[in-house]
Image 1: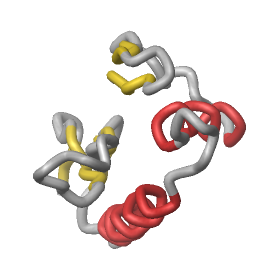
Image 2: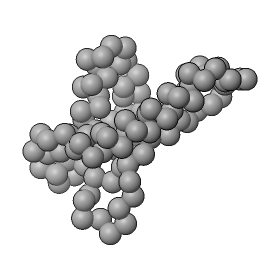
Image 3: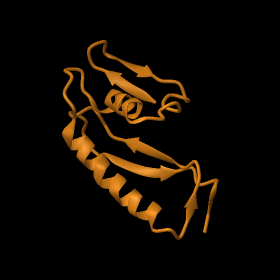
Length: 102
């Protein structure tokens, strides 16, 4: 994961295994805060709302019961540069379907 640090004016890279040890609510919240809190410490509520909307849709798919998913991942994507010319809306998508079956 790479996050832009506007104070240091550089991107901060997190190892590929960052977040793999998030087993509880507190650890998950701490990991997500790195991604959705700006340099001033404000939560980017529009980003969080967009993620929640997509997560609700993903949850509806997961609980419908037609597919069994094991060890799938959710990819969160958004452009943090609000001045960017091509602003794409934040999104979250399920990825890694290697262990899925009907």
